[in-house]
Image (cartoon, rainbow, N blue to C red):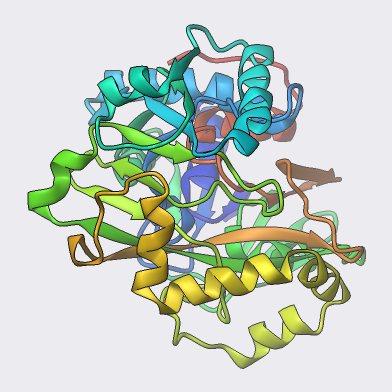
Length: 402
């Protein structure tokens, strides 16, 4: 069979892209290829489940634009299809006077991105919301929420297949031969298509390199590890509590998240992983580790963030150190209050010069589209990103509301 579109990857972004292709072009034959046995097996199903507001992102960036529109879409989608979510709000807390200018920068970005009802809170005010939290000042962000992203992915897949779309699980893409027609080669057979859209997450660089000689980036995997708070200490956290992000490290820092299942998660850290799908510290893949350490950009970023990165590794190995980091926000948390939780691996795109690709990165070359970088808030933004990619593939300019 000749397909009109083959989408690689059944995470939230790939599924949303395929779904929008069928919505906007019902007669098109669309196939999703996924190497795993189900949807959202990696980044889409191993995140903290947060609906991000868009407060952190540079105004005008793809992250900011897609997070704001994606936020509205994912809530409407959840309402329409009965997916559990809660706009519980969060506070971002400065724990020292030195962090106050950084807190102001975050507030100003939120205002520039159009967020309404942001509010500064004094220590006395934020402790009315989170009585066990400590700090000097906070921002209240009412738009932030929590949601069941694996349920979102399952529903998108269901709607996509109801529209006639196909999903091929357990099909790992090995090569893409790009010509007048495109041949996508997998370990279970080959598929002819007119256009290919790659949403390959942790392997986005590998798939992009199948069709381009411009190998100008690599995915470096960072594992984020979580603890859960014991049932008898869940009362310590009412909503979501975040620190002011460390400007010397491209992650948000350990925080407290109330999940849709009622559990409270604490974390994540950000530890260099030695396997792209390495969810445990002991997971190791020689070839993938060699890719990382053999890349010139890695040593440049290591020189910049090495000290902080070593601290993240120490916290991974030391529960006491992890607890101490949490105690900056929540002094009442003790080591015995934490039990091991899950983990996720974030795909961080890195250039040869050692700079991080911070924004969403989507490139089109002829009949091939590669989503090369889609970090957080990609889950929140998935319906917006999927529509953007679909429109790019269909060469239309159309916005659909759920």
